Each structure stands twice: as structure tokens, then as C-alpha cells.
Image 1 (cartoon, one colour):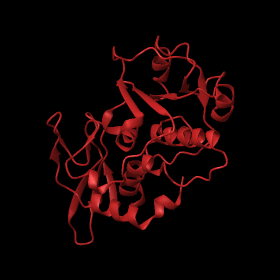
Image 2 (tube, rainbow, N blue to C red; image 1 turned 90 degrees about the vertical axis):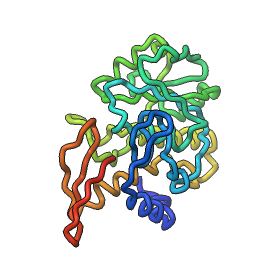
Image 3 (cartoon, rainbow, N blue to C red; image 1 turned 135 degrees about the vertical axis):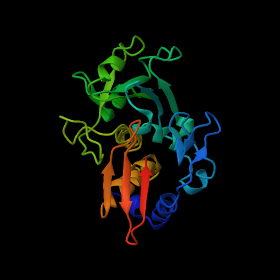
Length: 251
């Protein structure tokens, strides 16, 4: 998943500034204290928008349906809402407002036996304008897939990729991607299928901004960092600095 975007000095500067933050602020929607963004309301805390990449538009609409067992504090799908809000719709299952979708222009990212690769699917159905993303553990994804609104929709499958997620699901291999990784690769595959002559220019890298930031904070900065149990699904990390000071970080 490495790219020029990930090693860009401006990006590293943004990461450094975010990593220095310690004061939690009050969410203007729900009133809860959060550090970077409210994962319940899916909005940035005051002052954060100026420290992150600008919002982007995607070549296809994404509809994310989150299973209730998928803890919001651990969900990477929220990163898509933050990076591309105009291209993203978010529903919490079993929300009654989840609409009926048209099979003529909608597909689910799901590795069923009948799923086609995205490029082949677009050759057969160029009217595709919407992808549905099921945000769930693999053990619970069947409940989402069997929703009445989704049962008759076709599926598309991604190419093979290796995850860089630091919270792998037990008993699943490294080809099982985090939700935001799946979104990122799906969007890139759509763009390539629609414009095969255009070389990728990094335009969708902001989708992975928070994924890469948290990976850097909690994994890549491994020297002197020990994980301690967290509450409400949030990883807490105790970092003993060179001068003996201890800090606790939360995702």
C-alpha cells in the first residue's frame, strides 16, 4: 500500500501535528469528548479540518452499512465519510431509512461465488454508479448481505491485496482487508476501469489518511510503546518517553 503520498513531507508534517494533540474537545453534535473526530457523529472536532487533506470526490457513490456489532471507535469505514463526504452515505443497520436499491446501477462489494471483478462488471454494466460497502466482521457480514434491500443486488469482487491492518480478525488471513482498505482499492479499480489510459496520480490517497496515521502512531512507532487494555473498543497505548514521562494515547 506504500505510495508517494504516504512518504510525502507535507503528510508527515500533518501526522506530526496531529500526534502532538492531547486535549479532547466537545463534539458539537453529541456533546461527547473526542480527540480527532467523533466516530459516532462522523465529523471532525473543531480545528482538525485544517490539519488534514482537503475533501475529495470519488468516481462512484459509496453506501456504507455498518453492523451494530462493529464498534464505531474501531470502524475504519468512518474514514471514508471524513475524506469524501459528498460521495458517501452512511447507514447504521437496521436503519429503517435504508432504501431499496436498483440492481441496474448498484453492486455490493462482496466475494460471493457469482461476484465479478470490477473491470468485468463495468464492461457488462457501464451504468454502475453506486457501490455498497458492508462494514462488519466476517462472522457477521451475512446478516447485512441478507437484508431485503440487498438480496437481489449483484456483487463485485476485488483483486487480491494484502492488508496492513494492525487489528487482524482471528482465523482470517492477510487478504482480509480493513473496510477502508477495501474502499480505497475498489475506488481505484473503478477509476482504472473507466479511464485505463490515465495514470494514477494519488487523488484517492486521502481515503487512507487516518488509517496510515493510526498505523504510524500505534504500530510504526513501536519503540517504547506497550499496549494496555482499552475501554469501549478503543486501543490504549502507554508510551514511556526518553525523559521518563508517560503518555496514554487512544484511537
